[in-house]
Image (cartoon, rainbow, N blue to C red; front, side):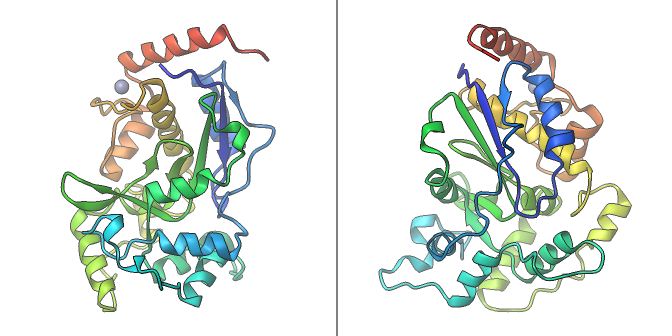
Amino acid sequence: MLKFKYVHLYSNQTNTLDLVKIILPEVQKYFPNIIIDLRRLRRPVLYNINEIIAEALVSIRISNIMKPFSRQLKKEAYYRPRLEDLVYEIKFPWTLVSSNTCPRIDTFKDAYSRELILYDGFMMQRLLRTMINENETNTDHVHIIFEDRLVCTFSDEDWRYHARTIVSGVPSIISIAVIIEAPARSKEWYIKHMELAAFDIPIDNECELSNEERLTMNKYLGYGDNRINFVVIGYILQILFFFITEGNPFCTDIGCRLYNSHWQEELIHSQLKAGNLCDKHYSLLQQFNTASIDYHCF
Ligand SMILES: [Zn+2]
């Protein structure tokens, strides 16, 4: 059991999460003896970035989801990113464009929907690791970075990339875009989307639900949806249990917040309707909390 002492949270670029009022107090209820970085809520890591970081982000984009990272197209020595790609990363999430009602969310969604850009999660983790405080990279600290880009990882099992809501490690990443986009859609949708994009064929999104439709239906999560705050709590727990269990955080009980949901309806059930831990994981949490009283110092 890995006994971390501090949890640091970094807000997402669009700042759509209510970390202070909803997320932090709720996580603290589960982990009363851990210091969650409330006083110094941290700004997004990949925000106001320079050209070097932008270039690094372009270099970890995935152009073909059927090939591992080492076989992606852009690895030639002479490769230089296009200027528009650098500008996209530097300006991400395009919040400067004004909008009448909800500028942050709308402009992000507009920029986002123009292109579906996927990033290799482990390469992004490696990049982010260089950007966090070196004194806080030991096992006492857990860093959780909320990210608005779409994150994916390659699977050796079926030899393709999958969108990933969480990438656990140092630091851990939670992709807000994946929470909204991935669980609602089928694998086939992603494959078709990436194939069309590879040939510059315009993508017909008519069959997709609009954000407003999603929110109205209440069945799916959408941009600006307050329920995402409660869903995020479950993902934070999954990351913290990744450390507690040393790599095996998921539960098979759909009534447990550690259930690995593949569809938004499952996600809404395990995080919102059930909204707690199963007996087994509650008992594990108690063990962790009892052990952490000994060294904790307020
Ligand atoms: Zn469980």
